[in-house]
Image (cartoon, rainbow, N blue to C red; front, side, top):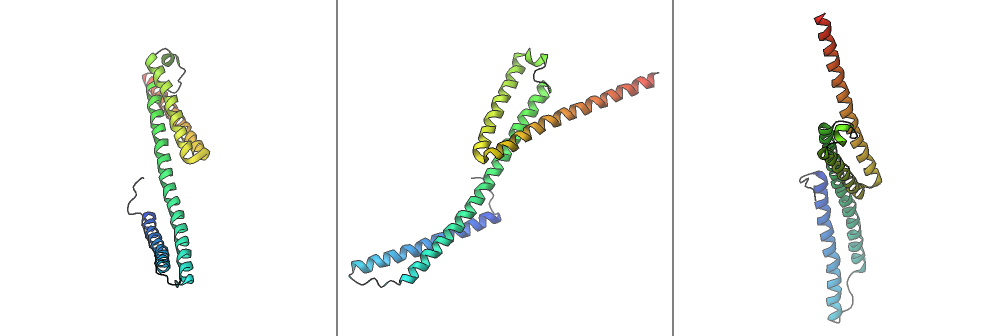
Length: 178
């Protein structure tokens, strides 16, 4: 459970859990009272309508608790999905910085260390993606893959921008020499 203590959803969840417990105790109290009267040979004098009211209130409170609980856990799933996606993007960016944007480049392919890094990135990304898919489904996996692709694209764009700046600086220096 990811802690978001003090949040409004957590406060609501706690309040609804308390209602469920009170409702359960009320329903259980009706059954205990009924059982005690039966054992004593007394009639089932328990007010049937109060039993139904207690049971209906418990059912209502239970459903409200479950809706809030599902919403709360969905927040955990989305936070975990985000953390896993960030992790994959950070790994990808690290490998891009080490190997360059072309994982098939000669310097990468000919280096056992760089090749192993690229291969491990593929395995790690696939593993993290499968975890995301198991948490948030195909839509979560799609967002994950898009984020990793966007990370690669942003790195390549930044690299191109830096190359252009270097080229412009070099041209400027050459003009000044003339």
